[in-house]
Length: 129
Image (cartoon, rainbow, N blue to C red; front, top):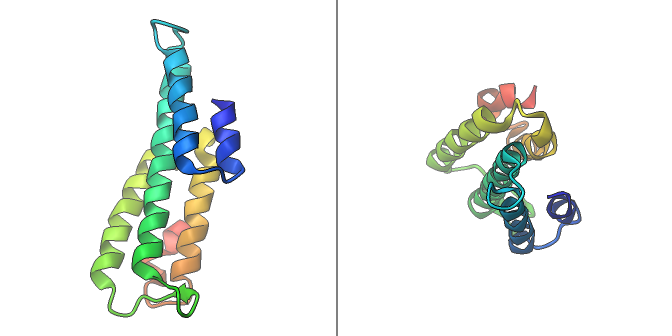
């Protein structure tokens, strides 16, 4: 499991990291390692990583303008609402888990980068804090 997390930190391709975490899950199952606590934590970590990746991908596809190299929110009200819903789900599932502190911090930084100094800032103020 630590190898998979190290690979994430080293910005290895996500599919390779996911494969490593799935291999770790196999070792923790009752038929092999029988460590239910580690199995659950590994599953939870993988879920958090996939959710974080989905949020970042959505933000890049819907808000990032390659031509200017910045985020553009004009005319994106529906997309902002969908992002806010996904963000709320992510935070309610993972924000209080100390093992997932880095993932939550990455998402928080993304939200700040996109929504600071925009008309949507008040909507996301709680995430900034």
